[in-house]
Length: 221
Image (cartoon, rainbow, N blue to C red; front, top):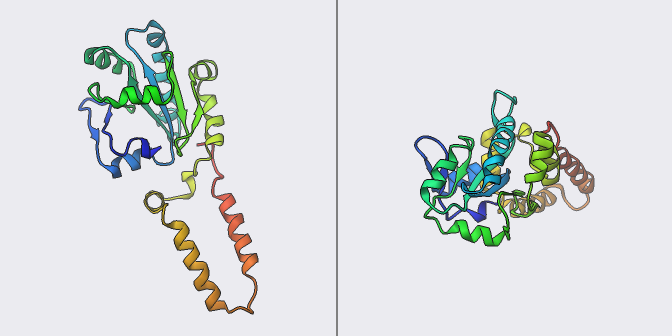
């Protein structure tokens, strides 16, 4: 998912409209999260009716007033508005914790084509690896509300943050590409230290596999 936006500028829907414009900021915000791409237009009455539903859905999953720990969920508004004024007005209907692409950013239309958006509103739900989990979740969100997030969380196979400190998780995110090489080097050194006749490697690797299986357990979020 991060690859989709590494070279882009994401804007926070807060009073100052702060920008996330560095790779580290974007990785920190998007890594290991489900991303909802909300394609909509202020001039659409259907979008206007759906916006409060989406606002409540996202707030109930990410606001500490409702949940002990925020869901691993990001909402990004992809405006299909006809003017910047329409975009700014529609942002008032969306949660303050949501993000958006600026009106002048042509990447909005690229994403519209990339995900074959043919109607508004459309909520494309993406796994952390950028694959599409749900092409359009509008009906599911309207029908099930926050309960549908449980299904998304399980299907997306997120790393449960209950088992990682903030520092551990950031470190894991930044070094994920080099981890397989490190593991291979470690196993080779381990064999050399133990010697060829010591045995027991298979058992230890199986144990490590069982520990890895437990890594994704924990709470619903």
